[in-house]
Amino acid sequence: MGTILGFAAVLMWAVLALLTARSGAVPPFQLAAMTFPIAAVIGVVALRLRGGSLAVFRQRPAVWLLGVGGLFGYHALYFAALRNAPAAQAGLIAYLWPLLIVLGSAALPGERLRWFHIVGALCGLAG
Image 1 (cartoon, one colour):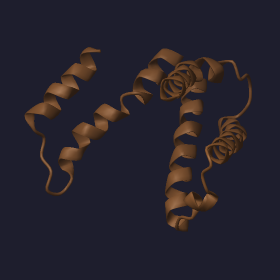
Image 2 (cartoon, one colour):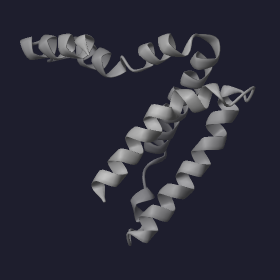
Image 3 (cartoon, one colour):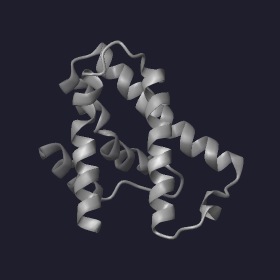
């Protein structure tokens, strides 16, 4: 089951830019607002089918604000970028964020950039 879910996740990630480009004149915030409830319903149904409890959703409001706000903001800005820039360039910039997080984490207190961070960054840039 895990392999099927992993394949589905990769497939959805792979077609995100294509579907965004094909969404026509739907504004980015509206597109995000339309897709998030669909994902929420699918997630709750999947949780209930596995016998999970809705108690997992009991979180502090700050956690919900950061989680949902961050995901919503990311996708709304991603959709806006694909509307205003060529898809290849916008996608390249959007998917550099894991690399930038690794490199930027060196600026955090008590952290430093180590050799394996550099090697990982070079591997990521090499493709």
